[in-house]
Length: 269
Image 1 (cartoon, one colour):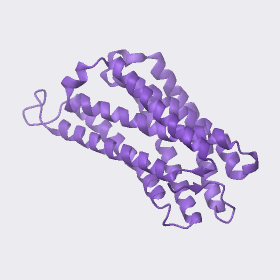
Image 2 (tube, one colour; image 1 turned 90 degrees about the vertical axis):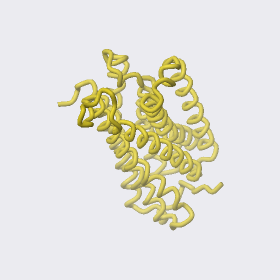
Image 3 (cartoon, one colour; image 1 turned 120 degrees about the horizontal axis):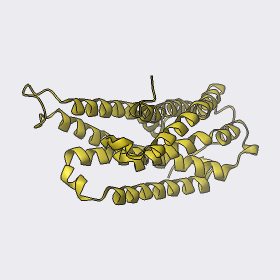
Image 4 (cartoon, rainbow, N blue to C red; image 1 turned 180 degrees about the vertical axis):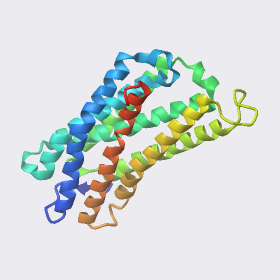
């Protein structure tokens, strides 16, 4: 397995790359952390959303928000390691960063898979007890994420870009297929639709939400998949600059989930 060292010299990691990495981490800590904490407060204080069906995913949503909160808190360790490896706590950073980066996409995948089953296979969705299978899937995601984080901790300061790239690609593929399948099913006329084939209000709302999530997910993941895939193609300086830009876009895309939670609970103007 090919890995790339994170302790590159100043010649390999340009000032621009360092500035982008630090700016993205500061943004994630200063803006993302309070936003994610407020979203977590809403999810935990209003379980079930007052009977709204959209909140049946509260376990996955809470897990995703928790991962995002932990990902925000990695900023101080990450910035210290970028500036000086002598002050870097490598094993902890590897565990923290690897777990969060893998976990956030696994929970996004579970959320999308649940939407897929609910729309495409409603009888199967109703057959299983919601709490049981959601806890099982959430636990499996945490175990997989911790496994990847442990591997990253043991390998630090090397980063298993190929492993992360493979995880991102699998999640990218599954989420895309699920979202497109759900959108296709929503477009089909149903018994509750009007005679002219126009979707009802609930289906229109679901279509808009899933479309927004799909576009956000594509914008968030594609730069990471592409940049990690160029590990053996680009020179180190260009590769790390591409990864830094991809991570900046990735972190900014992580704000969509808490903003959506605030919108769902009518906390936005």
